Image (cartoon, protein in one colour):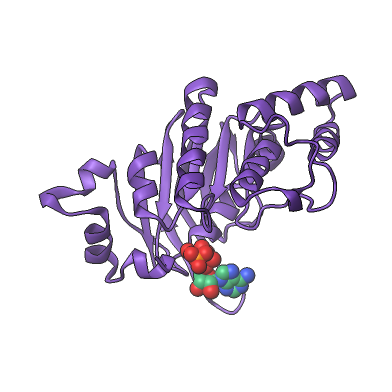
Length: 246
Ligand SMILES: Nc1ncnc2c1ncn2[C@@H]1O[C@H](COP(=O)(O)OP(=O)(O)OP(=O)(O)O)[C@@H](O)[C@H]1O
Protein backbone atom coordinates (compact mmCIF):
# COMPACT_ATOMS: atom_id res chain seq x y z
CA UNK A 1 0.00 0.00 0.00
CA UNK A 2 3.03 2.26 0.64
CA UNK A 3 6.47 1.63 -0.76
CA UNK A 4 9.22 4.23 -0.76
CA UNK A 5 12.80 4.05 -1.92
CA UNK A 6 15.38 6.61 -0.91
CA UNK A 7 12.73 9.18 -0.03
CA UNK A 8 14.43 12.42 1.04
CA UNK A 9 13.54 16.03 1.74
CA UNK A 10 15.95 18.92 2.15
CA UNK A 11 14.26 22.23 2.87
CA UNK A 12 15.44 25.55 1.46
CA UNK A 13 18.10 26.66 3.89
CA UNK A 14 19.64 23.20 3.96
CA UNK A 15 17.72 21.32 6.70
CA UNK A 16 17.82 17.62 5.75
CA UNK A 17 14.54 16.64 7.37
CA UNK A 18 14.17 13.18 5.79
CA UNK A 19 17.16 11.15 4.58
CA UNK A 20 16.96 8.16 2.30
CA UNK A 21 13.86 6.58 3.84
CA UNK A 22 12.63 3.17 2.66
CA UNK A 23 9.17 2.31 3.97
CA UNK A 24 6.95 -0.62 3.13
CA UNK A 25 3.36 -0.89 4.41
CA UNK A 26 1.09 -3.78 3.43
CA UNK A 27 -2.64 -3.66 2.77
CA UNK A 28 -4.73 -3.74 5.96
CA UNK A 29 -1.79 -2.95 8.27
CA UNK A 30 -1.91 -0.39 11.08
CA UNK A 31 1.58 1.11 11.21
CA UNK A 32 2.81 3.56 13.84
CA UNK A 33 5.46 6.13 12.96
CA UNK A 34 7.36 7.22 16.06
CA UNK A 35 10.18 9.62 16.66
CA UNK A 36 11.35 12.53 18.82
CA UNK A 37 10.33 16.11 18.02
CA UNK A 38 11.85 17.25 14.76
CA UNK A 39 12.74 13.69 13.65
CA UNK A 40 10.97 14.01 10.30
CA UNK A 41 7.57 12.37 10.92
CA UNK A 42 5.34 15.15 9.64
CA UNK A 43 7.64 15.87 6.69
CA UNK A 44 7.48 12.19 5.66
CA UNK A 45 3.72 12.11 6.05
CA UNK A 46 3.29 15.31 4.05
CA UNK A 47 5.35 13.81 1.23
CA UNK A 48 3.34 10.57 1.26
CA UNK A 49 0.08 12.52 1.10
CA UNK A 50 1.30 14.61 -1.91
CA UNK A 51 1.38 17.85 0.12
CA UNK A 52 5.14 18.24 -0.12
CA UNK A 53 7.40 17.34 -3.03
CA UNK A 54 10.34 15.06 -2.16
CA UNK A 55 13.82 16.31 -3.02
CA UNK A 56 14.73 12.80 -4.20
CA UNK A 57 13.57 9.21 -4.08
CA UNK A 58 10.51 7.40 -5.36
CA UNK A 59 7.28 6.17 -3.81
CA UNK A 60 4.17 4.23 -4.69
CA UNK A 61 1.15 5.06 -2.53
CA UNK A 62 -2.19 3.22 -2.83
CA UNK A 63 -1.03 1.68 -6.11
CA UNK A 64 0.03 4.88 -7.85
CA UNK A 65 3.28 6.71 -8.37
CA UNK A 66 3.53 9.58 -5.89
CA UNK A 67 5.22 12.00 -8.24
CA UNK A 68 3.76 11.02 -11.61
CA UNK A 69 0.21 10.27 -10.52
CA UNK A 70 -0.47 12.47 -7.48
CA UNK A 71 -4.12 12.97 -8.43
CA UNK A 72 -4.83 9.23 -8.34
CA UNK A 73 -2.98 8.95 -5.02
CA UNK A 74 -5.17 11.73 -3.55
CA UNK A 75 -8.35 9.96 -4.66
CA UNK A 76 -7.40 6.88 -2.65
CA UNK A 77 -6.07 8.36 0.59
CA UNK A 78 -7.56 10.19 3.56
CA UNK A 79 -5.47 12.54 5.68
CA UNK A 80 -6.15 13.98 9.12
CA UNK A 81 -3.63 16.64 10.09
CA UNK A 82 -2.49 17.37 13.64
CA UNK A 83 -4.69 20.41 13.98
CA UNK A 84 -7.80 18.97 12.33
CA UNK A 85 -10.10 21.25 10.43
CA UNK A 86 -13.74 21.05 11.45
CA UNK A 87 -15.82 24.18 11.69
CA UNK A 88 -16.41 25.44 15.23
CA UNK A 89 -19.62 27.22 14.22
CA UNK A 90 -21.39 25.41 11.36
CA UNK A 91 -23.49 22.26 12.03
CA UNK A 92 -21.28 19.39 10.94
CA UNK A 93 -23.77 17.40 8.88
CA UNK A 94 -24.05 20.23 6.37
CA UNK A 95 -20.27 20.60 6.30
CA UNK A 96 -19.80 16.87 5.67
CA UNK A 97 -22.36 16.85 2.86
CA UNK A 98 -20.79 19.90 1.28
CA UNK A 99 -17.36 18.29 1.41
CA UNK A 100 -18.73 15.09 -0.16
CA UNK A 101 -20.29 17.14 -2.98
CA UNK A 102 -16.93 18.85 -3.52
CA UNK A 103 -15.61 15.36 -4.27
CA UNK A 104 -18.13 15.26 -7.12
CA UNK A 105 -20.90 13.23 -5.44
CA UNK A 106 -24.59 14.00 -6.01
CA UNK A 107 -26.58 15.41 -3.07
CA UNK A 108 -28.16 12.02 -2.47
CA UNK A 109 -24.82 10.23 -2.49
CA UNK A 110 -23.32 12.93 -0.29
CA UNK A 111 -26.10 12.45 2.28
CA UNK A 112 -25.61 8.67 2.23
CA UNK A 113 -21.81 8.92 2.60
CA UNK A 114 -22.23 11.43 5.44
CA UNK A 115 -24.66 9.13 7.25
CA UNK A 116 -22.31 6.17 6.84
CA UNK A 117 -19.22 8.07 8.06
CA UNK A 118 -21.10 9.50 11.06
CA UNK A 119 -22.44 6.06 12.03
CA UNK A 120 -19.08 4.39 11.56
CA UNK A 121 -17.41 6.81 13.98
CA UNK A 122 -20.22 6.52 16.56
CA UNK A 123 -21.30 10.14 16.06
CA UNK A 124 -24.97 9.73 15.21
CA UNK A 125 -27.01 12.48 16.90
CA UNK A 126 -24.05 14.84 17.16
CA UNK A 127 -23.90 15.83 13.49
CA UNK A 128 -26.42 18.65 14.03
CA UNK A 129 -23.93 20.37 16.31
CA UNK A 130 -21.02 22.66 15.45
CA UNK A 131 -17.45 21.70 16.40
CA UNK A 132 -17.38 24.12 19.35
CA UNK A 133 -20.15 22.14 21.09
CA UNK A 134 -18.21 18.85 21.05
CA UNK A 135 -15.55 17.21 23.21
CA UNK A 136 -11.98 16.81 21.96
CA UNK A 137 -12.53 13.11 21.25
CA UNK A 138 -15.74 13.78 19.31
CA UNK A 139 -13.98 16.45 17.25
CA UNK A 140 -11.18 14.03 16.37
CA UNK A 141 -13.76 11.47 15.26
CA UNK A 142 -15.46 14.08 13.06
CA UNK A 143 -12.03 14.89 11.57
CA UNK A 144 -11.76 11.21 10.61
CA UNK A 145 -15.34 11.16 9.27
CA UNK A 146 -14.40 14.00 6.89
CA UNK A 147 -11.38 12.02 5.70
CA UNK A 148 -13.55 8.97 4.90
CA UNK A 149 -16.17 10.64 2.68
CA UNK A 150 -14.53 9.81 -0.66
CA UNK A 151 -13.96 6.15 0.26
CA UNK A 152 -10.17 6.03 0.73
CA UNK A 153 -8.30 2.72 1.13
CA UNK A 154 -5.43 4.26 3.09
CA UNK A 155 -5.75 6.64 6.02
CA UNK A 156 -2.98 8.93 7.31
CA UNK A 157 -3.44 10.22 10.85
CA UNK A 158 -0.98 12.76 12.26
CA UNK A 159 -0.98 12.40 16.08
CA UNK A 160 -4.67 11.43 16.24
CA UNK A 161 -4.96 11.28 20.02
CA UNK A 162 -2.67 14.07 21.23
CA UNK A 163 -4.42 16.04 23.95
CA UNK A 164 -7.20 13.50 24.54
CA UNK A 165 -8.00 11.94 27.91
CA UNK A 166 -7.27 8.19 28.31
CA UNK A 167 -10.90 7.12 27.76
CA UNK A 168 -11.25 9.14 24.55
CA UNK A 169 -7.93 7.77 23.30
CA UNK A 170 -9.03 4.16 23.90
CA UNK A 171 -12.33 4.93 22.17
CA UNK A 172 -10.53 6.32 19.12
CA UNK A 173 -8.29 3.22 18.99
CA UNK A 174 -11.45 1.05 18.88
CA UNK A 175 -12.75 3.06 15.93
CA UNK A 176 -9.43 2.83 14.09
CA UNK A 177 -9.34 -0.95 14.65
CA UNK A 178 -12.89 -1.37 13.40
CA UNK A 179 -12.08 0.63 10.24
CA UNK A 180 -9.40 -1.93 9.51
CA UNK A 181 -11.60 -4.89 10.42
CA UNK A 182 -14.75 -3.79 8.60
CA UNK A 183 -13.34 -1.75 5.69
CA UNK A 184 -9.91 -3.38 5.36
CA UNK A 185 -8.46 0.10 5.76
CA UNK A 186 -4.70 0.54 5.90
CA UNK A 187 -3.70 3.08 8.57
CA UNK A 188 -0.41 4.98 8.86
CA UNK A 189 -0.25 7.14 11.97
CA UNK A 190 2.25 9.22 13.86
CA UNK A 191 2.16 9.21 17.62
CA UNK A 192 4.16 10.30 20.63
CA UNK A 193 2.51 7.67 22.84
CA UNK A 194 4.29 4.35 23.16
CA UNK A 195 1.26 2.73 24.79
CA UNK A 196 -0.74 3.74 21.72
CA UNK A 197 1.80 2.19 19.37
CA UNK A 198 1.89 -0.92 21.53
CA UNK A 199 -1.87 -1.34 21.78
CA UNK A 200 -2.92 -0.33 18.30
CA UNK A 201 -0.16 -0.93 15.77
CA UNK A 202 0.81 -4.14 14.00
CA UNK A 203 4.17 -2.63 13.24
CA UNK A 204 6.21 0.35 14.38
CA UNK A 205 8.75 2.44 12.48
CA UNK A 206 11.07 4.64 14.53
CA UNK A 207 12.60 7.66 12.81
CA UNK A 208 15.39 9.72 14.32
CA UNK A 209 17.17 12.63 12.69
CA UNK A 210 15.50 11.87 9.34
CA UNK A 211 16.47 8.18 9.19
CA UNK A 212 14.55 5.00 10.03
CA UNK A 213 16.45 3.52 12.97
CA UNK A 214 14.19 0.61 13.97
CA UNK A 215 11.27 -1.31 12.58
CA UNK A 216 9.18 -4.27 13.72
CA UNK A 217 6.09 -5.52 15.52
CA UNK A 218 5.89 -4.18 19.10
CA UNK A 219 6.65 -7.66 20.47
CA UNK A 220 9.70 -8.00 18.20
CA UNK A 221 11.12 -4.69 19.39
CA UNK A 222 10.51 -5.35 23.07
CA UNK A 223 13.28 -7.93 23.44
CA UNK A 224 14.93 -8.84 26.73
CA UNK A 225 12.07 -7.64 28.90
CA UNK A 226 12.42 -4.05 27.69
CA UNK A 227 9.41 -1.76 27.35
CA UNK A 228 8.95 0.21 24.15
CA UNK A 229 10.07 3.24 26.13
CA UNK A 230 13.38 1.49 26.91
CA UNK A 231 13.76 0.55 23.23
CA UNK A 232 13.14 4.12 22.18
CA UNK A 233 15.59 5.48 24.75
CA UNK A 234 18.28 2.97 23.69
CA UNK A 235 17.91 3.87 20.03
CA UNK A 236 17.43 7.62 20.12
CA UNK A 237 19.03 8.55 23.45
CA UNK A 238 15.83 10.36 24.30
CA UNK A 239 12.71 9.44 26.21
CA UNK A 240 9.50 9.65 24.26
CA UNK A 241 7.65 10.30 27.50
CA UNK A 242 9.52 13.58 27.92
CA UNK A 243 8.88 14.41 24.28
CA UNK A 244 5.18 13.87 24.78
CA UNK A 245 5.16 15.82 28.02
CA UNK A 246 3.59 12.92 29.96
N1 LIG B 1 9.01 24.20 6.04
C1 LIG B 1 10.17 23.92 6.65
N2 LIG B 1 11.29 24.63 6.38
C2 LIG B 1 12.47 24.35 6.98
N3 LIG B 1 12.64 23.35 7.88
C3 LIG B 1 11.56 22.61 8.19
C4 LIG B 1 10.28 22.86 7.60
N4 LIG B 1 9.40 21.94 8.12
C5 LIG B 1 10.10 21.19 8.98
N5 LIG B 1 11.40 21.59 9.02
C6 LIG B 1 12.48 20.97 9.82
O1 LIG B 1 12.58 19.61 9.44
C7 LIG B 1 12.85 18.79 10.56
C8 LIG B 1 11.76 17.72 10.67
O2 LIG B 1 10.52 18.33 11.03
P1 LIG B 1 9.16 17.52 11.16
O3 LIG B 1 8.08 18.51 11.40
O4 LIG B 1 9.02 16.61 10.01
O5 LIG B 1 9.44 16.66 12.48
P2 LIG B 1 8.42 15.81 13.36
O6 LIG B 1 9.09 14.51 13.62
O7 LIG B 1 7.09 15.76 12.71
O8 LIG B 1 8.35 16.65 14.70
P3 LIG B 1 7.12 16.88 15.75
O9 LIG B 1 7.04 15.59 16.52
O10 LIG B 1 7.63 18.00 16.58
O11 LIG B 1 5.89 17.20 14.98
C9 LIG B 1 12.95 19.71 11.76
O12 LIG B 1 14.31 20.03 11.93
C10 LIG B 1 12.17 20.92 11.32
O13 LIG B 1 12.63 22.08 11.98
